[in-house]
Image (cartoon, rainbow, N blue to C red; front, side, top):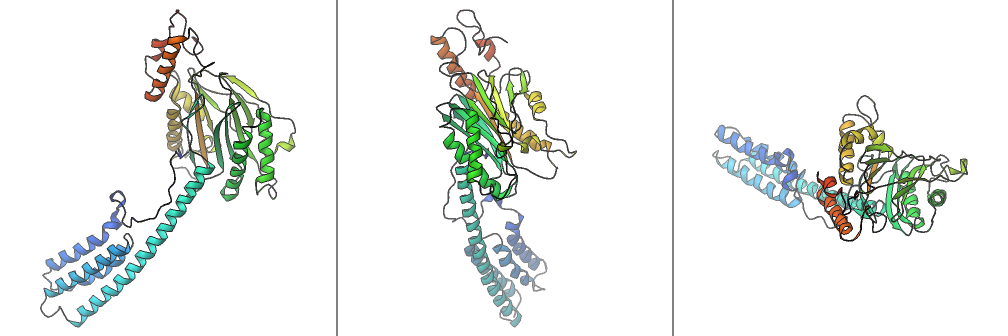
Length: 430
């Protein structure tokens, strides 16, 4: 997510850099220098006929807005020296009463500016530390999307809709279990801290229960029970629910099993373009008591390289200026139809940038999350048809190279024919 909203480790370290790096030095950072140079140039232009050194009084407060206490103290001393130099150009004005008052006023304003700069830097340090703690919480709650999990290659992103927030009401996770790789993506009704607490309850239960419950439908029921027990909102909010998709990729089976609890259906991006994956929708998690029947599991065959795109309604319900929802399937089909199976990172990056362009200028933002999952050849069922041995090993080595370096245009032709004349591509010819 950024995640994607991506990976990395949040650090909580002492803040010692009082001065901003050059990349963020805006016009306000240069304004004190501009004012000081302007005062000197005007004094030279008027040949010291007018007392223009009073302009330097404003330099220390301006410096306090962008610098730390020590630089502000140095700038204040420099301003006093400039005032002395400018006054000395006018005979009898160096120790004149009004100039002495100007020196004292500059010094007092400089002291106040130093104190303001010190307070600003401390507040900034506290804010950065708080931000670091929030990032650490996010990395604990919503872990970075791993590049590979079992037979899958994964990519994705996560963005909280609330300005300044790092975690919202969307959730996702991937884990390798004895039953295969299991994935969850979901969306909690509502926003804010209450939604984050429910996200924590669902993900905590998923990370434990995904390794214990063999049946995907039973896992969904366990997550629903966890919401009722562990979410602080459950006792006071009768309408609390979480839409979710649960997916299971059994090792070597070449298929995906899906339980749909009221979530937008996934999109399969393959050799034939993009298409919806059929699911059997059930009530969202938290509302299952209204329909006691268990969730139905749908199964779809997969071939190596097929990309499954999972997303929340923050992606599919992004509106343009005309109020039209973002057409996920149509945009993916238009981008990847008739081409080699894409890299999941390419799919995630495309949806993110394309959705941003679609909703540019529109009002309102929602949490949004997306996962792109691609099946890699496994040691058993993932090997292409044809003879094994050296050719099979060469095929898998080439697959890894293509994932790392991008799909080459001649891939299909290079591997279309096996050593016995049969089609060696995944699943044979289409």
